[in-house]
Image 1 (cartoon, rainbow, N blue to C red):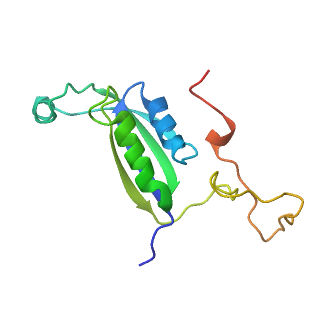
Image 2 (cartoon, one colour; image 1 turned 135 degrees about the vertical axis):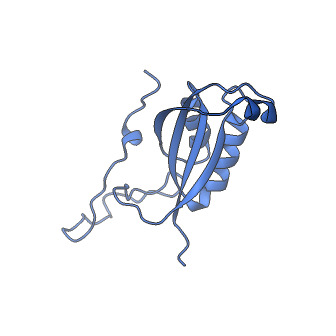
Amino acid sequence: MNKSKYELVLCIVNAGFSEAVMDAAKEVGARGGTVIHARGTANREAEQFFNITIQPDKEVVMILVPNEIKDNVLHALYQGVGLKTAGQGIAFSLPVDDVVGLSSAPHPQEPKHDKKSSPAPTDTEPKEIATQNENTNTNSQ
């Protein structure tokens, strides 16, 4: 079985904490994510078990990351928005089998090549596609 090149990190936090999730993830190399608004279904027994009050309005942040930085991202999320913080977040990852539509630009931690020395893509090579969060900062306006 092939080892996945990417992992999907999902972080579920109280509403209003998705920016904190992305800040923590970006500090360790993640590029961007997608936020989905959600509603939790936990009951009183879960609140007693975790010894916390569970806010029903949630945000689910999905972050596709290279497998090599997944553990660092999960650890950063645990530290920044984990259950013992105001965000009361939980995070987990899932392997990703195939990906299309990602930029072929080097990861920020990788050295960038000089564009003058790079050949132009041909019709048979995939063209670079920018991801949404590389070009916009949705939560800072």
